Image (tube, rainbow over all chains, first blue to last red; front, side, top):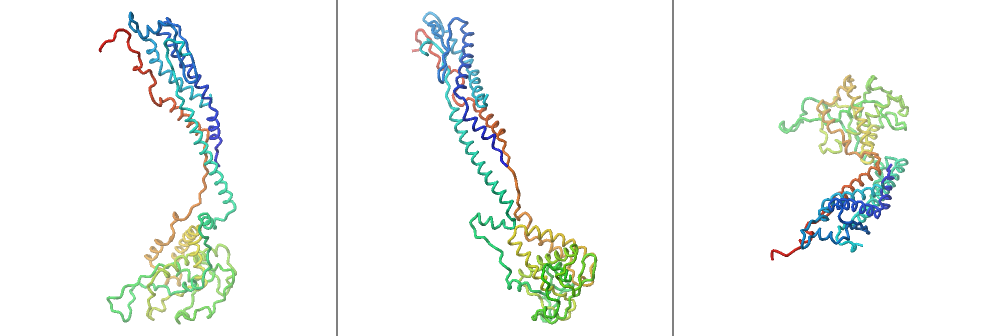
Length: 108
Length: 346
């Protein structure tokens, strides 16, 4: 007597994994974490925006002064805030993406 | 959209999960097919076990392997002639001296391990498996090529004891005694078949020609009906896988009975009892096929809990997903733009 119902269920579940939804949710949450970190680093001086496409998310600002602050100018020394925020929130973003895909595989 | 920002952070994902899941699904489908094949094969085996006879197991195996099926051939008359009654060895503590040989060439004769056979031979007619009544004991049953001493030596029936019930020789053999009384003689006859033909067929040493002075000590020869029964277990050991077990169990029961008889020997068995060393030798070589070598039929059910397997695969995937597969999980500091201002260091 061999029971293979669980095996078939797993195969069926793997065929129905919503990878697109997991990817979008992971990008959105990771981008939110990075944006929150940028807000604290930039102390609210620049208006930040987040754009999510198929497989990538962009967190940036259209303020020209932000580039001068990030890269410096002839009159000012650079005070990078985006690179530091990305470096600090990179690990959390990776964990968030992995958690979303695991939840998708579990069918949650 | 990205061009709308003068500066920003890009978070990109490389999709390596879809291909991995596809590979896992393929493996699971192959596993499912293999399990289904195994299940169907086991169902067939169960159905076969329900209707098949285990005695034909060898034939089924031979058919599955494409080998010719061997059927037990009937026992030829030549085979029966090969196991004609032969004089058992003489039980004597002193070495037998040949009259014409020099003394230095004479070796003490060690009797062969045939104690059970000698004891079976003294049992009267109850050791019978045949259903047809054999001819009554008469001078015609004695072979003409037998020596005169064998013709004149009568078979002395053992006195009736509790361990070995006897039946009068005048009674027909078809009339089987009661069930408990018939089991022991039958097993004794089977034991005689296991022990007696093998040393006689395998040895090249002819039986010694005993002097006439030892003739009164020679035991009566086993009768032909007993020897004709002896060949049957030998054939079963070669053809039927379940025969060795039956033979060994029978031997164990017979040994117990023989020990009981030896505890209270009768006048007839006293002269035919084998020495203790011969008993030990017989027991050491008695199982012609060890029980481990015989095929054993075991049935086992295979249970695969798919839910447990699925959870295991999920945990494995989780670990693989949590671990960064390649590259870095942080910002590469080398991508930091250069400092603004006058170039230095040139």
